[in-house]
Image (cartoon, rainbow, N blue to C red):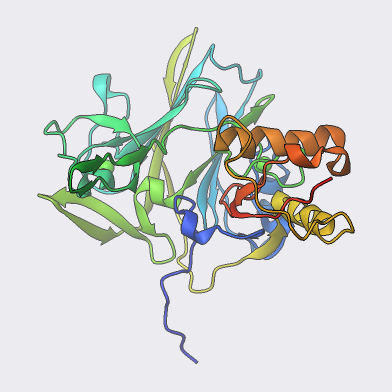
Length: 358
Ligand SMILES: [Ca+2]
Ligand SMILES: [Ca+2]
């Protein structure tokens, strides 16, 4: 029987629309098939030892061993130092991506091939992914004129909401820098888990993951990539694979790897498994509280939130209170319950809960 493709055979980490709810759909048919940023190589070795798993490409030079693989959501890179541990910001790593013909080698011929994007890992707080402005989908939106220079790279960014002009009022566009590379552990089994992590290192192991869409891949299951713009119009091409280069800068100088090619099989059925987000248990706790005997039927949602900002409420107040004092000991009046269902795995947001009076 033939199934019609519905266009959702991969996971785009750059859209919130695929990530609502309190159950995550992670790539792989089970947790053990997943790839995780945690400074450990066991996920890579599991793949290498499983004949039916997605292939791992391995390269070596005197300085490093590096490996590349992928799943329905990301391209993964592991760089293992042959001696010594990683030490940022005393050293830095550049990773250039050659996705389609054309591009620029960067000043001083940083890369051997003309790249469309490159990542600079300089430290936990200042690592950024850059894209050639001629290749950048961001400039396909009106109100943002594409820069004239062909050799210009800018941090990746995404338009969250268009500029709106209504009579006598103008709302500026909201732009998010998606190239800001977040340090953290993406392994749900870790107490430090964050699903927003982009890279992590521990000892001599460094792991990075690249959302497909950020690399210009419009659909990894059919290997469709964005091509350079012709005027204002984007064009597309099917690619065989991607080439990447690693540049290492340290007090001992600069070294470069040869371009490393990675190609993969397209697919028609994405693998996935369910995982309870951290918010699952928080919602369950709320539910238990609300259905306990302390509920006042007259209670109303408190709004606005008591925290200084919604971000503070979401990221600090409630999780910290629950973590440090236990849910039942929190004074009911102190609980800010302005929540949305979010792509973030922590406290969920977007709907109001009635707050029981003490
Ligand atoms: Ca790992
Ligand atoms: Ca190129």
